[in-house]
Image 1 (cartoon, rainbow, N blue to C red):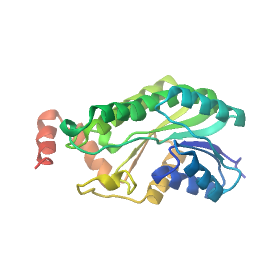
Image 2: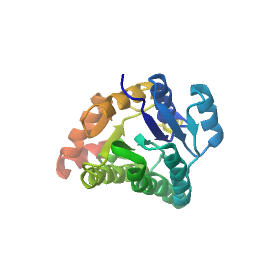
Image 3: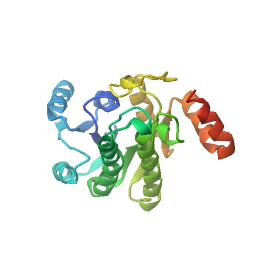
Length: 245
């Protein structure tokens, strides 16, 4: 029988993170659940069982991350760290509040950098670090605004880490398409191939248990965007411009 895994999920209070927590708990993993809201984490931990540990963390605050990492370190070496925490504010670049733009960068991109720095010391040798990008980071799309730019940065960061940490940490990249969560419910445009958080959780777990660097889903959307991003600009930009009409 395989040894029980210990997994730290960052961004566990809602959406994909909460669905992942429920699915991994069902499969027998011991979980460390993190997000900004300790009350919501405690409710989730109570639902899943007393062996699961809630630890509040604000990934935009390095002191908060270091304090959480100290608590996680007391538990022992971790098998997987899955970093999902992000914020989102839909709309065009010209309409975005500059303060919110800075907060999105700090949370989504700089937060991923902070987690990437503390993770290796917490993981067992060969343990897994999964960062969450997005298919929105494949190519600049209308209304992608600063969120898409941060996710492009996370993709690049994960690619760099895959090389830097080779042999020590199994770095993975998660690139979801549209998932029906509290964040995406703010969108006013049609979201093709949208999936439930449970479907996303199943796809992520299946992908992380396989050997591919990138976990991306749903494939009917992601392969189309991959093709678009692979085109030369003279072909891709007229296609993306049509999306503004």
